[in-house]
Length: 578
Image (cartoon, rainbow, N blue to C red):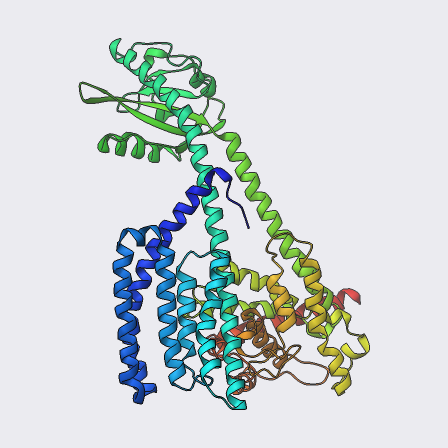
C-alpha cells in the first residue's frame, strides 16, 4: 500500500476522521429507520416472535437515537469511531439475541448480523486492523451466546459451522474492501498533495508574471497605450488588442513566431494569424464571451500560422484591460505548446501500438491451437463475434450495465479466441481423431482447459500490473464449466464461474453445434437454439441464454457469413496449392 509522507500524516488522519464523522451520521439514521422496519420481515417469517422482536428492534432504534445525541456532542465529534463501534455492538447484539431466541445454531437470522458487518465495512473508512477487529468482534457477539447457552444436535452443529464459514468469508471480503478503499484514499490524498505543491509553485511564477503585467498595463494606460517595448524579455508571446482583435502592441516574440514585420501602427488583426479552423472559436470565446461576462480566460488553446504556413500550437491566458471602468482591450499571453502536443500525440500513437501488439499477441496465441485443427475453419472469428454480441446485450441489463463496459467488451472480443489454446498440448492422435473419443481419450482432451489457463497464467506473471490476458486466462480455464456445477476442470457452479467464461461457453457450444465435424454434420440454427434453450439453467447461465435468444438473428447471420467466407478461403488455398 502507498504510504503517506510524514509531514502529511496528520492531515490525512484529520481527513479520515471528518469522513468517518460524516458516514457515522448516515449509519445512525439507517439504524434508526430501517431496524424497526425489518419487523415486516419478522411478521412474515416468524410471526410468533413479532411482538418480542419488535421490542428488541425499537430498543435498538432508541439506542441509536441516544447515540445520535452523543454523536452531535463534543465527544461524538472528537471520537466518531467510538460512536460507530457502540452502534455496531448494539445492532449486532440485538440481532444475536433474535438468533438465540430462534434456536441459535440453526437460526437463519444470522444473515442480519452479516448485514451489519457489510454495512459498516462498506460505509466507514476503516483501516485494515479496524475492519479485522470489528469483524471478529461481531462474530464473537454471534457465536459466543450460541456456544455457551444453546444445545444442539449434530445437524445443528453442521448448520452452525456452515453459517460460520459464510460469516468468516464476509469478514475477509470486508477486510479486503476496507484495505482497497484505504489504499485508494491514500493514493488520491497523495495526488492532491502533489497537485497542491505544484499549484503553489505555479502560483509563485504566475504571481510574478501577473505583477509584471499589471505594472506594464498601468504604464500603458498612463501613456495612452503607446509603449513600444512591451515585455521585451518575456519568452512567451504577449499581445495587447482592442475589443475587435486589432493588435495594438505585441512583444518581439510575436513577430519572431509569425515571421511578420514589426508593423506597429498598421494594426494587424490577431484573427489574421489564427488557423482558419480555430478563428470562430477564438472570436466567440475571447472576443465574445470574455467581454460579455467581463471575465478573464485561462488556458484556452488554439493554433496560429506564420507566413511560411508553419502551424504553432499555443495556450492562451487573457486579462481584460479597463480604463475608467470601461473595457478598452485585452492582454494576452500565448505560450508555445507545439512540442508538448507532439509528445502527447507520440504518447497516443505509442498506446495505439501497444494495443495493436496486444491484439497481435492474443491472435498469435490463438492461432497456435487453430493451426492444429484444420476442421475448425473460421471458428475463432465466429467465437469472438458471438461473444461480443452476448456481452453487448448483457450490458443493457440492470444487472450488468455497470460491470460490462466498452473496455470489457473489447477485451472479451480479443481474448475469447484463447479459449482452446490448451489444445496445443493434446496429442494429434486424439485431437484429430475421426469419430467419437473413448472415455479415456476424452479425459485427456479435458486437460486442455488447465493447460491453456496455466500457459496464459505463466505469460501473465511476466507482465507488471493488471494484464490484458486476465480475461483470456479465465476463459481458457473455465469455458467448459456448467451452470449446474457438472462441468470441468473444477466443477464451479453458477456465478462462481467468471462471467467471461460463461459467455464464451455458450458461444463455443453454439459454434460446435452449427459446424461440421468429422464425427457429425452441422446442426441447423433452429436445432442449436432448441438444444441451448433446453439447457438454460443447467449447462448455461439463464441470463446469457436470454441474451442469445434476443440476438439470435445476428448469430444466424454471422454463422452464415463466416462459414461462407471460410469455405471460400479454403477453396482459394486449395486452388493455390494445386
